Image 1 (cartoon, rainbow, N blue to C red):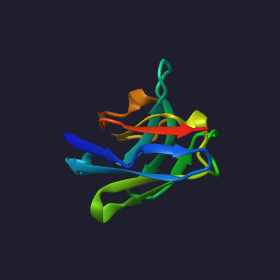
Image 2 (cartoon, rainbow, N blue to C red):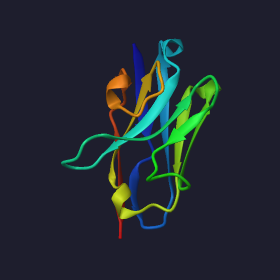
Image 3 (cartoon, rainbow, N blue to C red):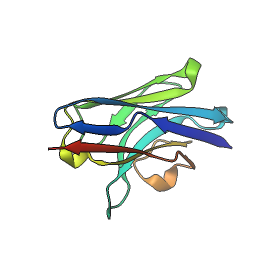
Image 4 (tube, one colour):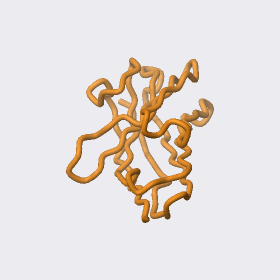
Length: 122
C-alpha cells in the first residue's frame, strides 16, 4: 500500500501562482511514477503532469506546458507541482497518483490522494 497526501490548494486570482505538494508513504519502492491529474465539476479526470522518481523525466499536458513545473524530492518522498500564470480554466480538484508505468490515463495509476481544491478567480 502507498498513501498519498496532497496539500497547497487554495483560492487565487488570475495570474497568481500556487505550489501543490504530494507526500508518499508506505511501499513507495513499488512505484516509480507520480502523476498529477485534475477534475473540474462535471468533467472527466485529466492528466496534468507526471515525473519519474528515479530519472526525474517529466511530461506535461499541452494545456499547462510552460506554466506548470513538476519536481520531486526523493529524500522527502514528495512531489511538487509549481503552477504559475494560473487561469480560471485551471480551476479543479487536483489529485496526485502513483503508478508503475508512465501514462496520461488515470487507469494506469494505482494509488491516489484525496485531492486538493484549486480555484482561480477571474
